[in-house]
Image (cartoon, rainbow, N blue to C red; front, side, top):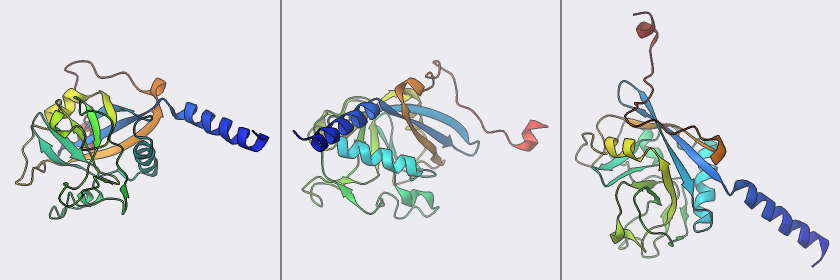
Amino acid sequence: MNRSVLFLCLTFALSSALHADDCALVSLRVGKEKQILHFAVEFYEGDAPATVENFKKLAKKGFYKETTIHRAFPHMLVQMGDPLSRSKDRARVGTGGPGYSLQPEIRRKHAQGAVVAGRLPDKLNPSRVSNGSQFFICLQPMPDYDGQYTVFGHVLWGLEMLDALSTKPTDTNDYPTDRIEVQSIKIMDRSQLPAPPKPGEGGTPVRRWWQIFG
């Protein structure tokens, strides 16, 4: 092996090692009170490398900011990641993305807490390619989906909070009537993640100036 090839191999290995324990801290802004809630996600780099890399790239660009949870099925799943959900017009929400799709990386099961790339149904999408940005989170095991979708991560903590959000009132398209939007998604090393909230501990309400002096 010549030196240039060896150098490239070592560089790739080092880069992979540096990013092998990346996680995501997702902050949500909920309802008119704009309460801030958080959950953390670990990635399956080995099983879905392209999907994970794409998610991290979009998160670092701020792509997900002000997108919403646009589908919620009580105690089953919540879905987010559609840029069209930034708009007040709900008619086309659920159909948006970054303008490209991703090849399937279907290896993991849909365990409770699985983070899964969204996609169109088989009739429209027999190759099962993933939407470039939308994803959903399994709030319970969903074995009927095994072998059909790309699972690229798992919720480390915050699943109980997401489960509670899934029970909020929705419209006829299963879109929560109270806006639940992404404030930020930060990619960081697992060691930098904050401690999970204590059981029963709420989020952080945003205080307005008139509330501070009231």
